[in-house]
Length: 139
Image 1 (cartoon, rainbow, N blue to C red):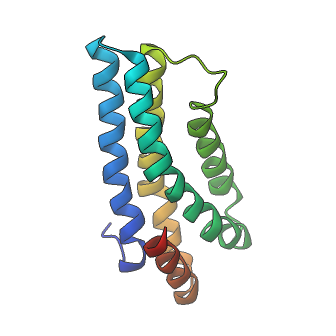
Image 2: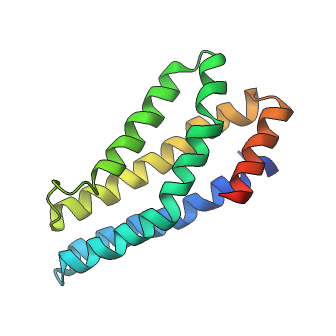
């Protein structure tokens, strides 16, 4: 489905996220340096994905709960936590984990584009959508 204007910034973030997922897979397959790949991924995660996650959490979760979309909210929160968890200090950071991160990120973006954003653009009020757009433009 075509993305409405208020969700275009978040949706375009997903393209950059897919590029990041692909980079994780390529780094895992290259066998060069898992440590360097993780450092690059973490910098990109902090600069691009974390702000994106925060906008979603601040503007989508409560309105979705109010609409009774608890399953979508639970999946959004669970997947954000899993992706953040990949960067916790106690997590191993090898080639298998790079591949796993890429797979998680790709699946998460697919979920948001195919399910979450479809509900948001169909069910949010114009005012709620504008709050999402405003937060996306800043974040």
